[in-house]
Image (cartoon, rainbow, N blue to C red; front, side, top):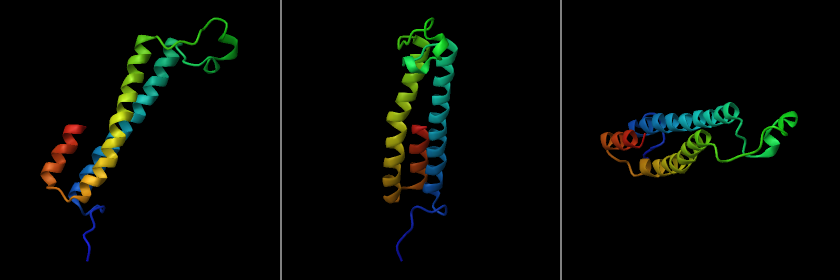
Length: 109
């Protein structure tokens, strides 16, 4: 009978799920922080994002440093978390040592 790696009985898979879900939740929270920052600073990237009655007083901009800092953080998450999840599934199929795999997941997170 083949070994099932992608079950909750597999310690490596359980640990991977925990850190993958935690990373994805962090990425989603950062997107909400980006939205909040844009509304607090009235720094919208597109003119159509601005309410019609405020378009005369607020200009679309991509140069607000506070908004850009949070946005770059979100882009960094997208660039790193998605490959972590995809490569993690391949890594689990290699049946790694549970302790070593746990430390790989922790170091990434």
